[in-house]
Image (cartoon, rainbow, N blue to C red; front, side):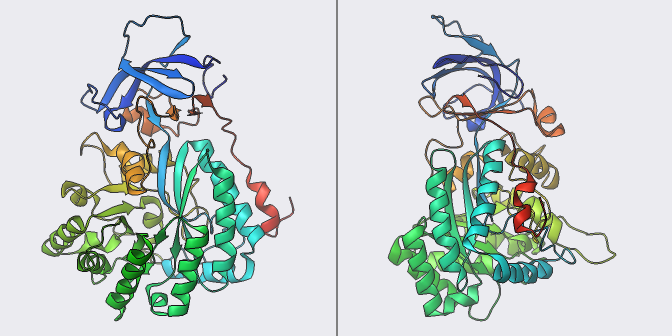
Length: 441
């Protein structure tokens, strides 16, 4: 079994010895150091983790053993907020000024002109091959769901999800503006598409329109009627008057909603007066809402003004939410499209840069959960985002021995195991998409 940096035993049963795992990502209690890392050995058999034992434990038997020399091992990771339907359109539709309005208008024009089934399929598959190579086990994408695109993107998504079963667990949530929820015909079309091709998820982009509460009532009633969970884009702005997160929490409490709710972005929460922030966070916790921050995309878009240095990082009040008991996570968001010109659906990169942008260091040793265990729970996934005896041996092996080593380099030599077997980590070449961008290969 050849890997990015080593040769592992090519047998159904073997042992990974002398490795470090984040204790927060191990199903059982393990003794950890001050950085939250535990020294263990992993017994692998028939594609599953057979046992998690203290490093150096005496074991009877003759299965091959390979020492990772103290390297950190993670479970395969969970990306709970992406947009693979619009990914990689930047070469043909770049954002003209790097702003949020520029992204909205550019994507709308590209969608109308170019998003055929073949175009969407090719870019989705390219995105998933990239995420898989980096070590992603599960991914939720938002699907632009307006007009004729509903009938194009959702059937393609269902086909892609079936093709990727066993490699990446996929989920999708519809994306449209809150005002569109007021149109009965639109809502009927979206619900029908989700029921036919989706994953029992409903959602929209919320902003402070006069009819926001009525739109939310429509969405919550539809979710309750059909047994859907909810996923919202929320307050992606630096305007402190944007408080649709509080309206969502109020709606969840008003409807006594018992399904899962995930809210993304929530940028303006970090710009509230302290008493308002505390009140909103308390409601979010009471309503059972989970929050995902998108640090790379929001740092790119927020507070961008020509000729002026940005004054804030664009991220939500993640530390305060976590301290209040709200499940929090970070994710990739957009990839090489007008909302974010960069990115590669690499959650190791997202965690590394999130640690810098959100200052996750010096604030507890369990932030690795934000790209693994916590989003897996928010997506309702079992045996994902943790290392557990009996679970699939889906692992990301690195040479880094502590967090500073892990975050100082891209970990390009990582090894990804799926059911105990190392995968081919060759990334797809951007030239594969040239024919969609108007370029000659």
